[in-house]
Every structure is written in structure tokens, then in C-alpha cells.
Amino acid sequence: MSYTGINGKVAVVTGAAQGIGEAVARLLAEQGAIVAVVDIREDQLNQLVTDLHSQGHQATACPVDISNRQSVEDAIQRIEETLGPIGILVNAAGVLYTGAVSELRDEEWTRTFDVNTHGVFYMSRAVVRYMAERQSGAIVTVGSNASGVPRMHMSAYVASKAASTMFTKCLALEYASDHIRCNIVSPGSTDTDMQRALWADEQGAQAVIAGSPQAYRLGIPLNRLALPSDIADSVLFLVSDQARHITMHNLCVDGGATLGA
Image (tube, rainbow, N blue to C red):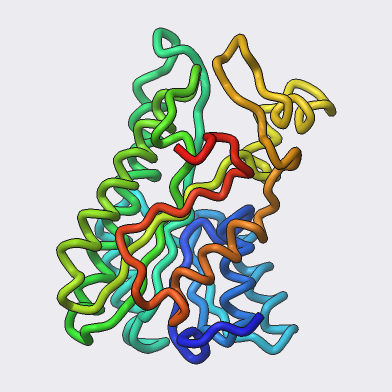
């Protein structure tokens, strides 16, 4: 499907070296966007850019630690100066540490918020300043269906995603008069390296789909894990002109795992 309002626009995607971020970057490039891919993993970014170039797409690697405010400010300024006005921002970078609250280390808690929350704030603040001058733009933050549902042994992740979700809604409200739309896509369990790292064995996917009463976790009614492309499709819709009257919305893409909550 072809979406309008994407072709020729500069799109910045964080967490683009793998998983959902990579899928979003590829899909935006296929729709004609000039993609600036942002991640701390420089080698993987360069591989992605090389691949996109070989397919005739426009992409530039921007190795950045989004938890560093000055690095973010400098990178966004460079993108504006070299690629052109940023029309789309997708905050897809994320980290996950698991464990009981009593065992969670200070640095794990801090790093989770540094990337999942502070990184969203730094990127959005830097980009929205430019967008406001032009009275146009679309921002999507990739949250989590867990942002509204307690999860055992995932307290830092859940809390950080809840914070970035509400921040994005506040951002949308503040900049609505500047015609900047800000939305959230909240995936459930998605077949990524982050998800697979949680599995105990090769039956991990089926265990997630079935759910766990002991962990007070429902299964997935649609009986499948999401693919990164499922999440990317939703992001693409929300940054396109087809969603021109949608802002402050949290689109849950979890196969029914949170029962529409």
C-alpha cells in the first residue's frame, strides 16, 4: 500500500540498527522518505544504509547515543543542515533489563530511563523545535502494551514506557496548534532479539502465546507473535497523511494480549 505525505520527507528513526526500528526505517525508505537512521551500533547502521542504497533508497547513518543530550542536539542540527527539514521522527530505541525489584541494579534502572524515556525527550525536543518553525511534522513513539499493565520482573521497562507514552501525549497537546501530530504505537510481544532474549528455550514463542497464570500474564488471543513489520505498518500509517486528524493516540498492536485495555 502507498501512503501519502511520506515521499521526499526527511525521516529520523532511532533504534534503527535492528528490530522494530530497522523495520520502520526500511518501510519509510520504501515509501520514498530520506531516512536518517540513528543508533549506537555503528556497524549495523552502516550495513543497513548500504543495503538500502543497493535498493535505490536514500538513507544516512547517524551513530548517536540518544541518552546524551548534546549528542542528540548536534545530530539533529547536522541532519537539518545536510539532509533537509525533518518531517518525521520515530522514537523506536529501547532497552530492557529484567529481574525482581529487589535485585534490579541502580545502573540498570538508570540506563533504562536514559534510553527509553530521556532519549525520547531529547530527540523529540530537538526535532519539535524545527518542526514548530515550519508548522508541520509527525512524531511517533514506540511504547509498549505493558505501559498500562503491571508486569512481573519488568518494572524499569514498564515504568519507562509509561513515562514516554504520557510525555508523547503532552507533546502532542502542546504542539497541536503548530500542526504537529504526536502518537504512540504500543507493541505487545514481537519477534525481535529483545523478545528472544527472554525465552528460556526454543519453545519460548509458544510460552508467550499461551500466557502465564503464575506471572499474571494473559496470552495472545490472535495466537501469534507480532513481526517487526506489523509494528512498522502501524507507524507508517500514523506518520502519513492518512492519519492527518489523529494525534495523542496510543495504538496498541498486541494481538489482543491486553484485551483492549
